[in-house]
Image (cartoon, rainbow, N blue to C red; front, top):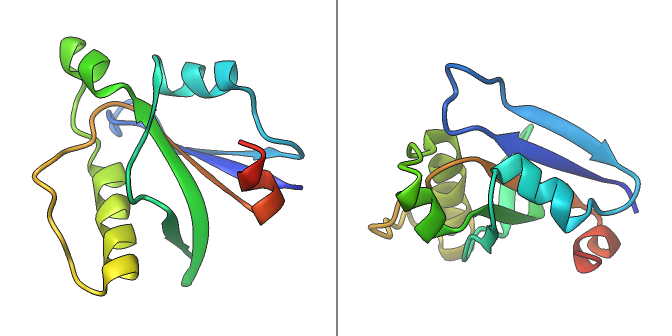
Length: 117
């Protein structure tokens, strides 16, 4: 049940985006540390393109209300990947009028890994 957690930082000038490998799903506490707050599922963000291949994923961000209260920056990387996921799913580029703010974690792995989350 191996999987990876990609951490996409909203302030990409201060932090490098990171990849963490796991042999079992990370705990909620670990994921909360990455996003620096309460977790919120990003709707329709269920695939990601990595090295030319599309993989199923689960994407989590800091709770929208918390992110706005904290004046978290818009996460350009996460928004780009999210819009790509919408394109994979619906076949066209769709704007939602919504912007993901703050750090984001994207969990990628086999179905057993994703189902265990």
